[in-house]
Length: 194
Ligand SMILES: CC(C)(COP(=O)(O)OP(=O)(O)OC[C@H]1O[C@@H](n2cnc3c(N)ncnc32)[C@H](O)[C@@H]1OP(=O)(O)O)[C@@H](O)C(=O)NCCC(=O)NCCS
View 1: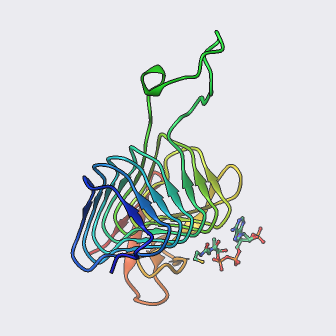
View 2: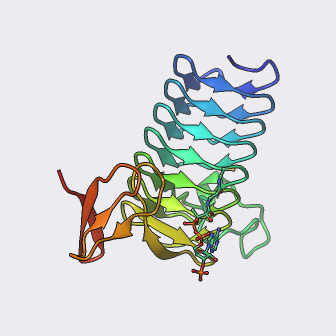
């Protein structure tokens, strides 16, 4: 279902069963996967790629060249920036055009979530299953499974695929309180124990 008042560029691709709500805009050459939900007023920039089963909530702004993997959650009013040193004009006072600056992107890896009104300042990568708290400003890469919060965002814990915080066990490993799946930490990275 694509709302009648959504603006979908003719060159954009939208996967099967993806729903796009009113006033959302999907720009030229953007590629959106299957079974996604794009909320009211969301903006998907030119050439942005969005995986399958992604939720992009109302008024989120996904500027190109963002890359969004499968199963990602982007909360309401989130902004993924694309210009690290923005200026409207050159030092000579001329309006800058597309050739006067180099866009940089945000990558969000499989299953990660970005909370409401967070800003991800490109270039950054949000790791697999990581979670960004509401209102955070992410200025550096976020490791897989990390929970980050604040301005600037700092790691305050680990989360598993259920989105719940992992609990540290006596032996130093980490466990999901919902699924009992365990994880091992090594030099600031976490990996699931199989
Ligand atoms: C980050 C989050 C997952 C933490 O939840 P939690 O594990 O229950 O954490 P708590 O509420 O117990 O807070 C733990 C600590 O983190 C801090 N904290 C929690 N949320 C925070 C946030 N958004 N920004 C900054 N700090 C935050 C708390 O102040 C607390 O700090 P303290 O230990 O110094 O007192 C949750 O607060 C959050 O932001 N969820 C995202 C909600 C959202 O945007 N949903 C989008 C759909 S509408």
